[in-house]
Amino acid sequence: MPSERTIRVVLGVVGVYGVLLGGLALIAPGTFFEEIGRYGVENEHYVGDNGAFTLAYGLLAFVAISRPTWRVPILWVGAAWFGLHALNHVFDVGQATSDFRGITDTVLIALVAIALGWLAALISRGQADADRASPG
Image (cartoon, rainbow, N blue to C red):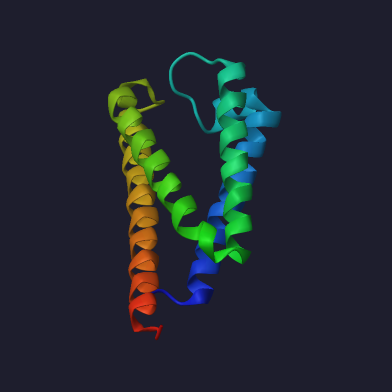
């Protein structure tokens, strides 16, 4: 099982990512679209909607730092979200600013999904092992 410090650092990084990226998409959807999410036709409302979810997820990751029982569910939600996000990118690779950008974005998003799922599984296994080892 990863150390407590490692888990907290990962959740902190996820939280910062979510708050910064989601905040930008929510507050400045045009800038987000131009600089980060330039896929297809711009729609500031939907960019802002996605920013709201991303911001909320980032805030929940911060809460999970101090609430261990929240960690596994928050990490699994992130794994599912990033996994589905990567799948969506597979279908839209050609809409990116370049094929390289489309493929790179898809691979990086998929790797985040795998990492979050892997961490959730490790923590779950560690908790199960601790439960079996404790008397009573």
